[in-house]
Image 1: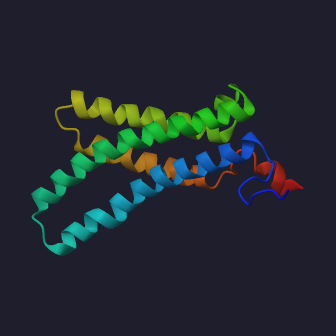
Image 2: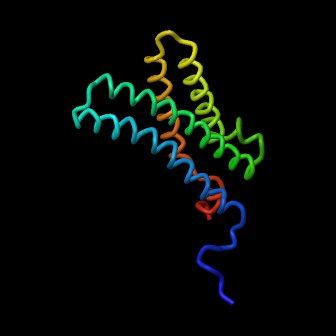
Image 3: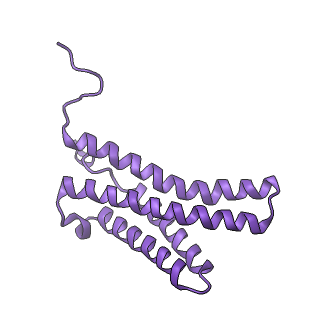
Length: 148
């Protein structure tokens, strides 16, 4: 009997690598698409600047929460494959931890600061740069395959 095309016998690392990449595409790609694609497209269409700012603030808050969720999912994949110590010893764990902390800072600034716009922009761009740095890191479970 032949194996199916989807089962290659690699075990949990293959599933973890797929989940890792999907979560990474959703949160890092979503951040940059909103900042570089959607907001400029709304401005190009001719919407009022106040409306564009309001849309960006509303979607930015929701997207930041979603990014934190995806980063936590990636942290779970990293912990399941390499242990809990990988959160502070591995560069990927450090980047993910910082992304979750920046997302929490974004939420805290939104609720407790009287003028949160600059801090929100800082947190948003910090998350985007952390995501880009994370994209350059190897996927858990695939690093061993690349060396052989």
